[in-house]
Length: 129
Image 1 (cartoon, rainbow, N blue to C red):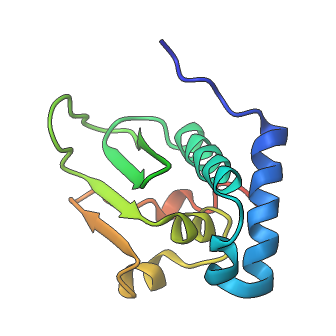
Image 2: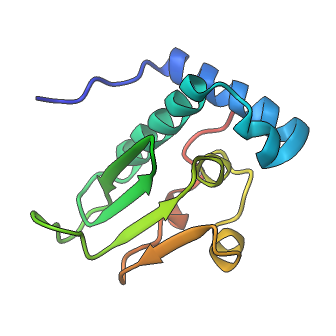
């Protein structure tokens, strides 16, 4: 069964609310946004990533809100995938909206990436909001 898609209007409203808090006070202020809003923003931007980079070569994890498989290439079917990117919600949303730079976030260890194809920088930002 296919996952239910988040409607663009609902998803972008959540992204804009999160973005307004982030722009006003950075990651600390963005963490104060209601959990349901943050969850919707994360899930919507992950959905947008999959739309932009369909496939199953890379797993992008944003605990506890979501994880998706994306990027064309060889996939996996069992166990831990060979290519994984993981980060917290604020880091993901900052990257997904163009407020942060992939190389800087990796360098600061806010993005954990393993595997030869563990890089989504070419698909970012996935939304503007």
